[in-house]
Amino acid sequence: MAVPVLMVVQNQGVPPDVRICEFGRTLAGAGYQVDVIAPRRSGQLAEETVAGMRVHRFAEPPEGRGALGYAREIGASLWHVWGTRRRLPRSPQVIVHFANPPDVLWLPFVRELGTAVMVYDQHDLAPELYLAKGGRPGSVLHRALLGLERLAYAVADLVIVPNGSYRRVALERGRMTAERVHIVRNAPDESVWTPVAPDPALRQGVDTVLCYMGSVGAQDGVDQLLRALARARARTPYRRYRCIIAGDGDALPDARLLAAELGVADCVDFRGWIADQDQLRRLVAAAHIAVEPCPSNAFNDASTMVKLMNYLALGRPIVAFDLPEHRVTTGEAALLVEPDLGTDGLGDAIAALAEDDVGRTRLEAAAQVRLARAGLTVGDARRSLLQAYAHARAIGVKKGYLW
Image (cartoon, rainbow, N blue to C red; front, side, top):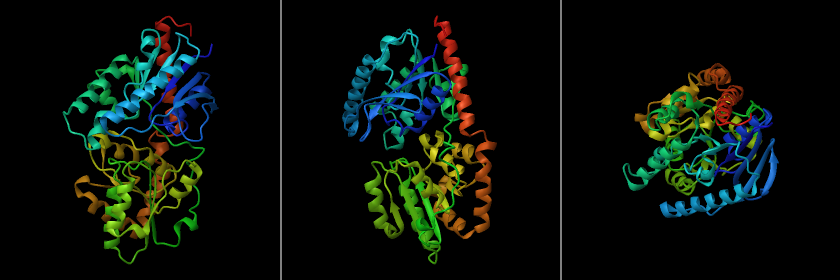
């Protein structure tokens, strides 16, 4: 019989959540029966089949502002997830795969904790993310997030994490045993993220095109990129720069204002969120330099940034701060800047690489082979996921499942 898998995600929809989509596609292709509960975004159907997954979408509540607003948003989402679950066929022999944030998506399945195999897919370190967004260490909310994370670990039969840093948190803070924590990395979809020739129309005849793709939140460092761009222009006033920023988030309005204050608005192209992956690929491919400007903090130091993987897949020269997981991802395929040098150091690195044709060519060559050599391809990720699910099935057998 096909093993039933019920995946649930709250903070992004499907297919926008690339990790959940890839997991669901891989599991469906391996013969699992995959259902996904996810929020319904504008233009999406309430029910449809996507890449072999049956997607069941619930009404997405308005985005909450502040702690109380966020709590109301999560509460409404949990209610909708519970209601969606009630409408689906119920089987005690099921793998429930809940992805954070938030760390409470197991609550609608509390009655199934004793029978279902619970898989905690930890996308983010919520306590560290809270601090990165300006939260206060030791505050009531910080302690609450740590407590909710502990509960997620406690109800999980096994945990899936994206890298070694998150694994250490699961072992130390979550007190998980080593065999119950599986690393499954994010990897670029090879059907999309393959090199293409730069589009001259996107380069617009300038000397250097910079590109950033991803969220524009307080922790993402887009403000650092804008300050670095201003520094690079000051260092090389004879060069014409263009900076393409493809992304959206709560820090985007402030980023637009900052660009104007710094005098770089004339060369910054804010594209907003781009769902079309082919269009996004063409924007990144047009860049002479791809930038990951997130600063050093407990969250960024421990996280693997998907944009870096996509930059590598397209063979783009990368400039980023020298953070622990950046080193793991990029190896020798990036120009890494000491975090203590700040935006001046980032800007100096951009200016230097813009002038160094040989250096960019060397980084391009290193990027083109980095994913395969470091075991960071989508094939590697799929094998790791299926190994984790083989473990989940073994847990089900111990519970008496006829798998």
